[in-house]
Length: 370
Image (cartoon, rainbow, N blue to C red; front, side, top):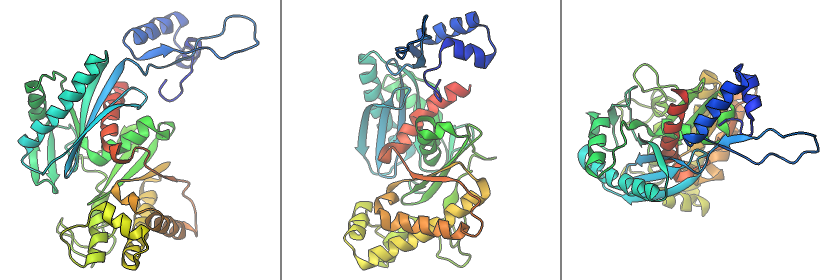
């Protein structure tokens, strides 16, 4: 029903092979639980009773998604169709894990209370973080921009939520790029495909991969760390200890370094975008250079995974056509000889909320795949 709204009970019986009476009972259960609702049947000149279309109910079940950013916290609430019910943002300075989770729990509690007061039932809570997360979603591995290393996160977050009156447990934790990938896959047109890659480009570069209707996490949960795939063996040094990683060419940090000649401080993305849009020659050259390397990375990803959809997201897309057109031109040039990829390349639909909306989508996706 998520992929194809408007099916009737008879349609579901035919597709599932179940009897009409069994389907009617199951549909009624889903209606009672808030998952489905009936729609108006379209006008028809045919004689007899028209079948009643069904769809996901957008008015009863809510999903809460949150993002722990490098310098902000973001909490959103969505219905089952991905429509935003509310959002709360709060700037913060990176600190220890416990203090961050306490602040995040407070924002989630505010959103939860608002939903409950309006009669919504919260289906679940999920959080995206800017680093690696184990396959079970219990521990963060390395979160370099926040200084966290190999720490439990799920249980401390549940305890922080309980202290502020939120009893929802367990809480799902996932990498921010994986969450953003789910925003497109669960609530975007990606739901019509079985493979999607999301590129998140900001201070660093990350990737989220959906294959066969599931997040592809890899053996240790670190699949999608495309920011540390090497594009040039003797390239610039990366924070990971290697050289020539894609992050050293494509990220906000890389563009800022090209413009200022110094690694710190990193220019804010709105300042970079302003300079590029204003025609600053150095900024334009830096954005184009980053775009060309992005095109190389896109080609590598398509050669490896051949996704149906490749989504470009994160703060770097604010650099606009100078950056994105250079990426597309390089991508097209690299595959021009064979042109065997039919991957659709498009921009993220949810902007700054992509991670938080995708975290909310993770709640729905997990419930449907259980």
